[in-house]
Image (cartoon, rainbow, N blue to C red; front, side):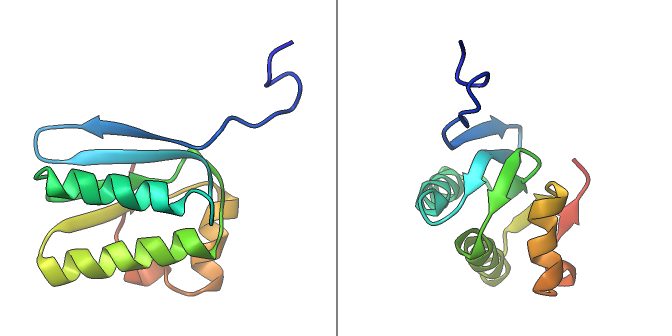
Length: 113
């Protein structure tokens, strides 16, 4: 029996899809206290590698807690301060709800996937 058949969840991972001048970062799984630093490190690495347009695609997240939200707000603020582009692709309803209940949806740049 596979782990999916047993009801086990895949471990958190980050997929990266670079293009000419933009990189799409796709966290898969749960973005929470245990995984937020992994995503932070990857975003810092990619920006340091010269990408000035980062798209964080939230569609593959199952769950996001306040530490994930805080990271997104920090990256958004840093991008505005430093003059590079950071945008988000909307996640599933459970993830989007966090943006809505905190009333910050309008502050962030959401783009189509």
